[in-house]
Length: 206
Picture 1 (cartoon, one colour):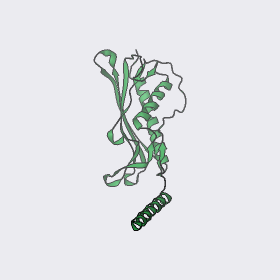
Picture 2: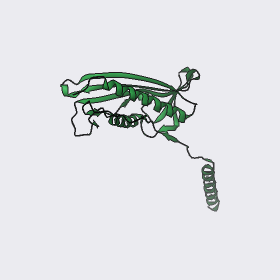
Picture 3: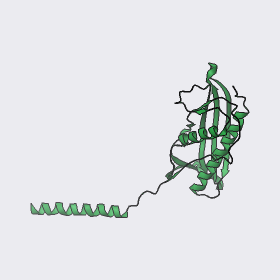
Picture 4: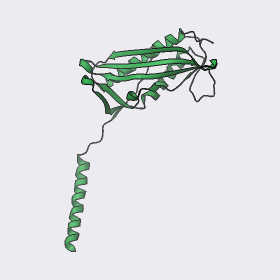
């Protein structure tokens, strides 16, 4: 009996020692979180000429809908980065940025979300087609592709009154994740600039 008890105690001691070694040798996961942002160079001085616009949440292609930053490399390889992530999902992040961008533009009477009690006639919908770092053939580019359309829900037929696609490829200053996210933000900014200009020229006035 004493022999069995001694064996159990010895095994328990070894287990405790092993657990201690694991804790001493293990390192915490070093994750980094990033935000995409669209930055205006100057606040516009424009009188609102278009009606209230409802902006739905941007959809995102399945490959780019997660928080992990995506990279493409040679031989068709696609990788997601477990250690470098967007702070929230790209669709939600870019929706917030787009609503704020259009609000500040001054071109619309109001910008509202789907949860609003307001009943605007026009609704903007969008899709993030691609959002990744392109490291193929020696490149270090950020690729951002988006498409948008405006639906006139007041028409009774949900007629599409505006549709456009945008494609930006921005070279990064170096191969770091920080440089990639900065280049992605530049691509998003340029797309929002083009979208704002095209909406203003689309004749959506009331």
